[in-house]
Amino acid sequence: MQLSGAAATARPDAGRPTVLVVDPSPEGRRIVRLSLALAGYTIREAVDAADALRLLQTLTPDAIVTGVSMPGPCNGLGLCDIVRAQPGLRDCPVVVLSGRTDPDRLRRIDEAGASALVVQPFSPAALVDAVNGVVGQAKAAFASMRGQPHGALSLMTSRAIPE
Image (cartoon, rainbow, N blue to C red; front, side):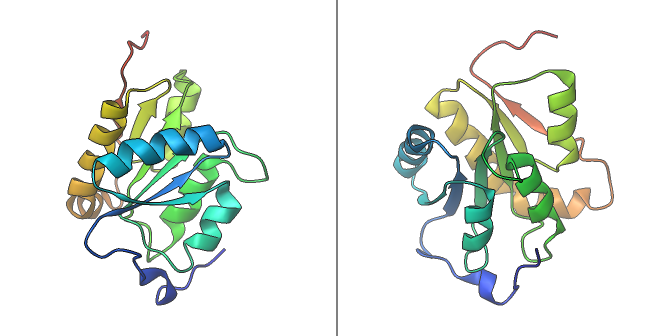
């Protein structure tokens, strides 16, 4: 799906960074929305990847926060793949929320070009730290990574991950 570059530039509140939250669970979206709104972000919400892609036709967020599992033919990693293929969005940071940290999942998250991973369950502080980090570094980090492996994936978690 090709998104229109000209149409994808509107921001609902130019004074506050905007985050698009993509999660099929109303409770999941609520937790992310409350955490990030208290940190000063404007929040837009989508219930799945298709809904997010519709919003991204007219919205260029400062970051996208997405879960991996969602209904429909496209999950959160597929959404990340699509975002990375869009000229007007490819530098938009994508924070992935996942409860799985097995090597296959971590490899796929990295291959999709995720900017950061927040392991579920997470603390609101871990989520805010991850979003603050990728929003603050987005332009410089992605400009320097073009054409290189995505080895800059950050891992943000509030629990220990077994090796």
